[in-house]
Length: 526
Image (tube, rainbow, N blue to C red):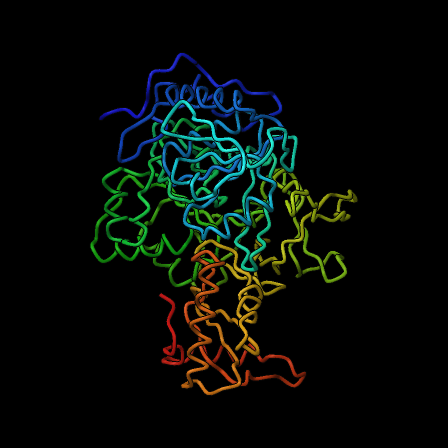
């Protein structure tokens, strides 16, 4: 097979002792240099070749002024060059911020401004889209360009190396979650041990680079010297083809959201096509519907199945081995990782038998980047051992089952998760209400897949021209401002919106309406 590598004079990536993410690739190039690191449809890269490419690109970035205090957006499709770019930015000591090339341009601009991004690393198409104000430098490989977004002495949100991942906020003002290099490395090391990754194995690298699951695909694989085989993006929409791809590539481990795994399991069951190399599955990002989890366990008896839980602010903070999960019982998210402390609290932050789940320990975020400033959302809480710790309130309610395992029971706010993305229903409503003809709006999520229905009150009947225009205008505004995962599945006229005894919108009644067959056929988002 043709190699993706080009000849380089450099050998290994230079890493600071204070930059453990950079240390991961340095160690991999020494310990597993001849093993395959990345495999795509275009070819392969060994760990030695990957390190050479990263070293070369990092040198070009440094020469262009990137280093500690810089914040670099990697604006590339998921690919080998994108992975190289992420490693190279990390090697310079800068903050790396993967950006989704499929996002609307207005959203991309908002992200770059919100996080005080100093440079954009992309190809010519990407640079033309972001239209930077500063100089553009040609880099030594893969047609990459580095664009400064302002003056050469501009500074990002942090002087320390870090990883910036944006929450899937729906309000048009997404928060950047800044994770330290050590926090991401903590997860990567734990995950490699938890799934017992073995040198020479093949992992299905499928997560979007903007999603925290991707840190497993990039760093845990390097720790163990396994091959990250990049699943082509288009295959995600075709479960049967994805299942065949897993079989053809002899994938042994996959870490994915339940929605992707459910499609693959259904395809395997229909075709009776065994995935003989598959030995471990981990899922995260959203709850796994119990009936579907039963199908997964029955389809792949004997393999490791792990439920990993944690918001982006903690990456993963609890884990459960669900192989012995029993039908009819809630699916647990397990217990805290080593080095992580978990506490359940009531509304006054007092320890409780059931309540909001609070996390402290190694994987916690540094803070949110808002308007270029790092804002720490954590609180100081006393834990049962008497120690006061910096802790993050997740907004998830939970209790412990008879086995001491944590079980989630819902959110304390209007956020939901689907397809692995966090979505703020109130943010969708805010955008809808900005349309002149919309008097009120309410978004609800129903069903195991959290299907979103947006109800609009226009003060007119559902069949009027005014209402039709309101649907069209609202749909257009939402498409312009929100990523695909946050867009409602249907928009429905409901005038007036139902209210409860307190005069507030009766969301439970709207959920009932949304779940009725045929009720959402007035407007389906495509």
